[in-house]
Image 1: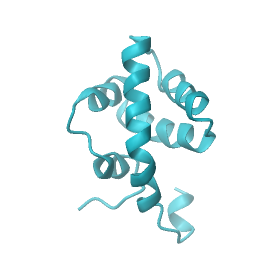
Image 2: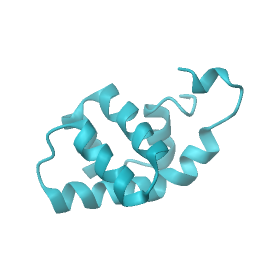
Image 3: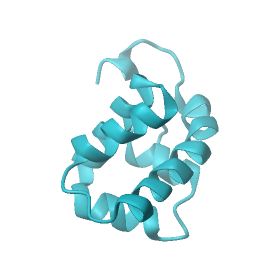
Image 4: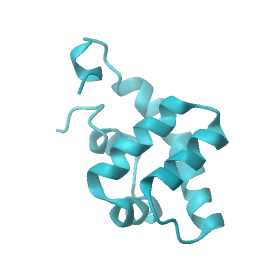
Length: 94
């Protein structure tokens, strides 16, 4: 991706944001019920947080695994910020 070629380490920023993002996404999923697409979910995230960047990161992560798996990962209580950021390719996998 373009972001990984810039030479800026986005991993720490992703982890800092991921805690809030995971909570907001989880609330969206629980409040809205069935969400049909990554665009719907991530668009709602962007609106709720006021950040198109967070919406874009969400979209990348969600599209990478698919909406069903993404929602499943969010609902699992063991989705930690580092793992989330590895999923979206902003942190290196161990």
